[in-house]
Image 1 (cartoon, helix red, strand yellow):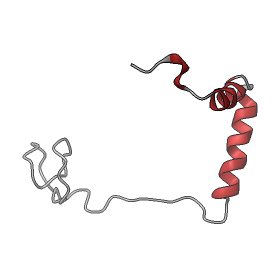
Image 2 (cartoon, rainbow, N blue to C red; image 1 turned 180 degrees about the horizontal axis):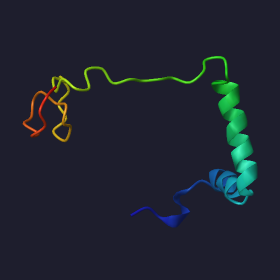
Image 3 (cartoon, one colour; image 1 turned 120 degrees about the vertical axis):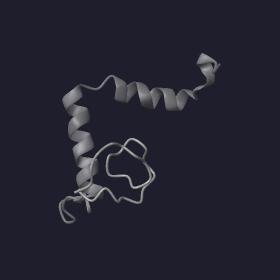
Length: 77
């Protein structure tokens, strides 16, 4: 169990300032951080599913109907 006084006072003061800010102020600050480091120059990263209907995925996911390693009861197309 961690003692309640284990947080350094300086860190606690910083957290307290953030905690007591209005929600929309926090949202605006997070947007500014996002734009500074990721901006709009790189756009949005897109992912896509390859081989979604073959049932031959090589990943080891027992819950997934596309896994080639498990009998999930789903017929491959």
